[in-house]
Length: 548
Image 1 (cartoon, rainbow, N blue to C red):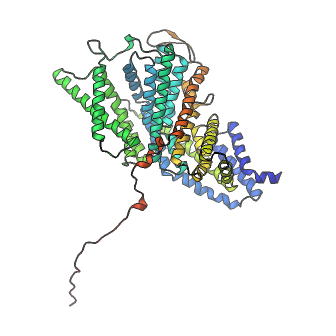
Image 2 (image 1 turned 30 degrees about the horizontal axis):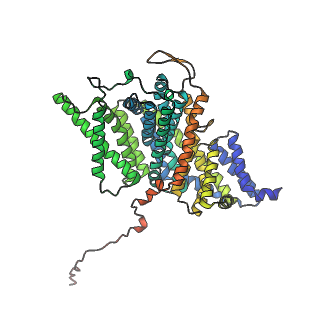
Image 3 (image 1 turned 180 degrees about the vertical axis):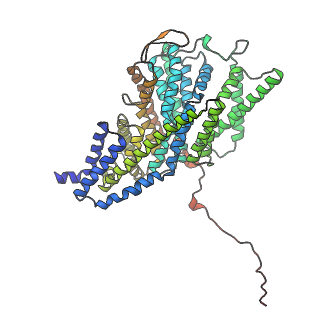
């Protein structure tokens, strides 16, 4: 029996960890306790020497000394400030009005705003809660099917996991030993692809079941001209002119992929903002307007988030800032935005700082527990057991990717992305590297897959967040006074299922079309080893010396 235990200590250790987690113990303590318990057993059985554990203080110090993880509190603080600044409410109201009477327009607005919030907050909880509080009552008021409404809100909130500046991408880059900037740039287009898939699903639902996703009634559409017209022609002309301006500026640029998208958006919104400001000045001085009300409203509402996206992602992509510096600038930008909206207060900053400290401590404690577990796991040659298990799979790279994605998908039913990142990724990354798989591509594939951990019934955190802000009892609608029925947990779960399937399709597309990710390699990069430092003294005659 002892011989069997010694020969199979690695799989027994991993199975014990799964049991600990299923019993409901906190992840950080389950990891650390498992590592220490099997470490003592390994010492008793002679698998490794007691001084093997002396490396633990250095590992813990390595966690505390990791500068990459500094980006987590910055982006978390930025997201929490933006959640309370009213930006999401303004965006949803304006974009919802923009779609007007189009069937499924409110759902499309939620997806569009969810993508914008994802690119500015990076925090799933903030996105789902704010979108649930603001958009769910409106969608229910105008007759949306509850499964469609809840599924769209939960799915659009989880875009914050794959669209930079996502927290999971920071963790993923750290665990894979790769650049956060490269991970951000590689994940940007897959994030936009998922957004397009969500919008395509809503479009199909609106066609197949018009009653499930109706448009706004005409009387609910605002931002009209004095004549009663909506002024959409003016907005369309402004959008085309902004696109042409961005194209003209970017023509001949060596930007590519995510760089090109972010910079083009920045120049387009800069042009539209300048036109809107000029229009407002002329209107104030001479009473003449050449932009409609809806065109001005959309422009002024879109400027803050798009400018923040450029401030954070644009500076990272073009190499002006590291992710940590970009996060710091984003946090300052969020404070400035809240100040402009007159919603910045000491209480707001205190609440955001407390929540940021809690989340950061949560991440660090899990990482320390993972370091304790991995020290013992590697000590009993667990990494070799995993490597032999996965490299012997039939199909080479393809077989490895299929099995790993199925494994991560199943584990996502029980573990969230932090736990998956700290426990599973360190075991899989060396095997993927040995098989010749690009680790950035591998990381983005798993990030899209782990996004399902937020949507899996019954343990998806996005579903829990949405359940916490959904009506549990009949309530009177604030605008119409009509008694509205509550949203059931089953409706939330069933609403999530189509979007989980869409995320699986997204994983398959990233695997089938790797260039969607690999474009990050096309950016010119200068490695420190490639830089030659040469000090050359100017030609100067020697000074004349008087030796007398």
